[in-house]
Image 1 (tube, rainbow, N blue to C red):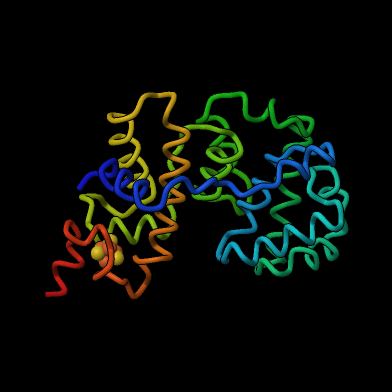
Image 2: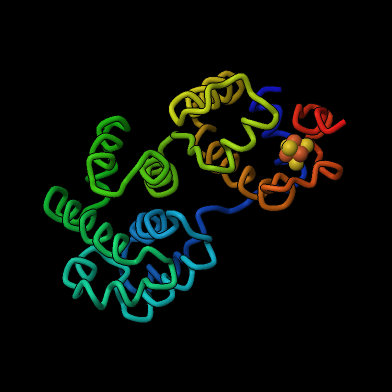
Length: 232
Ligand code: SF4
């Protein structure tokens, strides 16, 4: 079973997922860049559920701290306290200040300057920052930068393991496997939206059916899934 086939099945069942959840009206009203909220969210969501991230983002909004300058100027202990609901707040507070300082020092806090460059260059820079791994970097590229980069997370790896796709389960291999197939079946201008939706659909499916203990009997992929076939 190829990724495009799965994408079509999942999209038909669940429809558009409208990721990344960000309140653009808030940013319009506060004259801030909504893409920075996505960058913040991509860091805060490391090793935690999105519901915890939402609480931390609400706290940041209440304190008018969803922009590069205020994160840099924040007292580190106060920032830790504000983002506490997202867990691992000691590390994450430092990571937020690291990326904010980086964007200010190198791009004058201008996200257009940061994103209007080759994907590889931006990705390498993100990966050079402390605490930014491939999943976080690619989430930032896809959802904040609008770049055609497929995001691989633990749910994607689980699906690959169970279906299975003929892949090694390394990040780069899975990413390349998905991108190669999707590029064959979609026009270049459709890729950002397709990668955006597909990642969100995989998360949705993993939460609803393909959980740690999967609900295979009711899963619409079960006819093609080896994990399911091996149950009998
Ligand atoms: S059949 Fe089971 S293991 Fe396979 S994709 Fe569906 S829920 Fe996951």
